Image 1: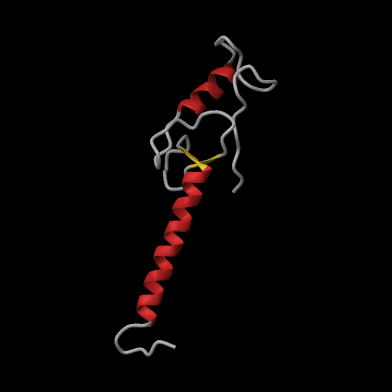
Image 2: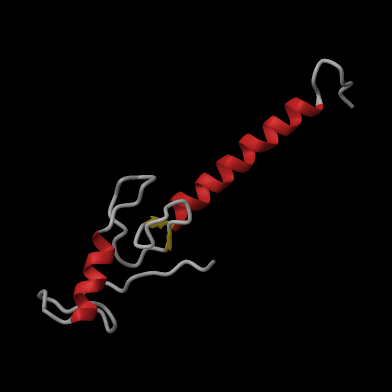
Length: 94
């Protein structure tokens, strides 16, 4: 899964400034206004993001940094669980 970004308004490929009625511009502004479920901030422009894999709503977006941090935290948590199970009271720690 590759992260994408939305170009800033007024940039070569970004939405028009001031706001216009172009369909592409309106869709870009709407996507930028969507809120990340991890940090509760808008997705914004020139910021990497993903479609939210944990949400059945295909329109849900999350910041790449937020999702990547969540995955890293989950990996650490699972590693601790596996370590705890592997060194339980009936196991000898190497």
